[in-house]
Length: 113
Image (cartoon, rainbow, N blue to C red; front, side, top):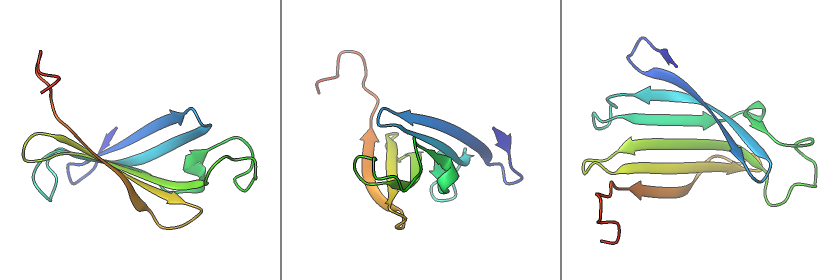
């Protein structure tokens, strides 16, 4: 983690998947984002060297579509819920929104409500 001149921190993450893909992501953590003043973390694996898999990238042994880019966004909304957006790029196409999650804190004993 390194702090930039604008108060944002540069961060790195490594994520390993059970389907033989390792992601090396790079991004920024803003303790007060420009959009809403709340914390925001953005990580991205945007180059082929950031995505590690067995064999050459164009090898036909891969199951499913070939992931060529990933972007993850984590941020708090006005209600204090943690939001997570996942963008994927497949086959060299531009990143597209793939998944949206909203997580809320569950107090003891209220998991079912």
